Length: 517
Image 1 (tube, rainbow, N blue to C red):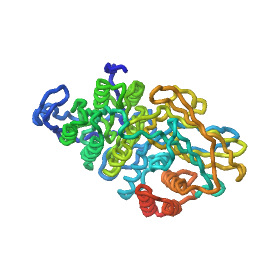
Image 2: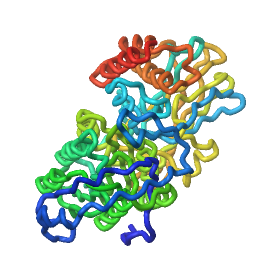
Image 3: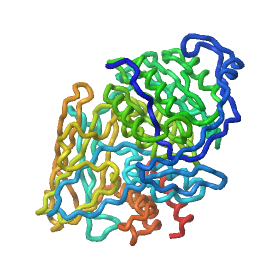
Image 4: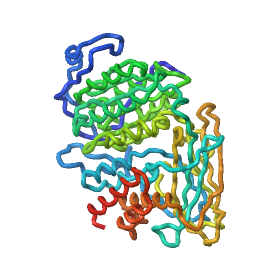
């Protein structure tokens, strides 16, 4: 592991074009801070007096996006990116479908926040695969390999004459007691924009939940950034949770947003505390707004990718509404070989940091790619629902230099295809393959299973179909023109089980009331 500090400044995408309030100062608990010095709140407040907000820069021209209308009173707006919609493909012309695995869920939580507030999300905020993968599924784990592959399907509930095919993979499970030691660096946005809607308070509550789940073998360091980035807490053993939580308790919003410096310092701290036998992860908590320092995409994304190659990964957790940069947070996690989640409620924080903590922290495989090979003799056309921004060229499936997705312990990944069979009796539809790099050896491995389909659609797949169709309608997909939210609500209500699925039914009904069809 290369421990030295990377040369050159990191730079950051800034898709937001407005400044943050600089009227509040940050206070921190007295105690042992970075470098071992002890400062009072008054001393630290004087030292960190906020600088004037820098002038906003133009949006990054390299990122194509559509900004959704911001709620009343917000100067910044919401930022999302349009990735298009997958077409139906003639199997005789192209029988391979290849994409990187994705376990992000941010798009679903963003939608929930919109609907809960009484409006529908903009079309560009909707990524179908993140709706599908939000819900835990009952796949059997593998007995020996890193992944088990599951396939099934049946008649589509929304497209007469078509079948819905499910391809699911399940990662191996690791008991919490067997998880590797986690060396975490929290990089926390404390800029003025984090004062809106009390979002910094939700960050603190969320991270307290995470810290409470850690064990003595784990360590936490903290970097914060407003107008300036600074190291707040050197890596501290989780057996001293009181010191970690006390540092969080004293954070207050201040200044502009120098995310560039915050991330640079976070990676420096993670590199200095690097453990070859542990989990080395930077955890960014932010609304994605930035207006100080470098503000273009090229440097930060390439630097994050290099750090990921050296074993320091990045997970991003988004907070806020009205001025929120979904594009930045999703891209950073993608390049950082981590996951992206959007925390809209304390319940979502609890879910991510308790029920799914081991999978959130410990990666079991890198560069995970999925390739489905359809038999042209059995399948006339196919269409992958979602994964537009995870597309991989068919010829790069076995090119191990091409980036794929990262999967944590116990994670599931599900893809749905709408297919048209040449005969309703055709059962041998093709093969699905999963290729990945082993987390321990970095050697590429591959597993495969035949595609399977039945006469009826399992209840669990019917529910996923309702989630996918909901996303298709919200994003204005041409494939959902003949569909309706009423049909989605009816199917979801018949097939939902468990807290999260029942909540989805409520969200669809609320969306139906808002939209009126």
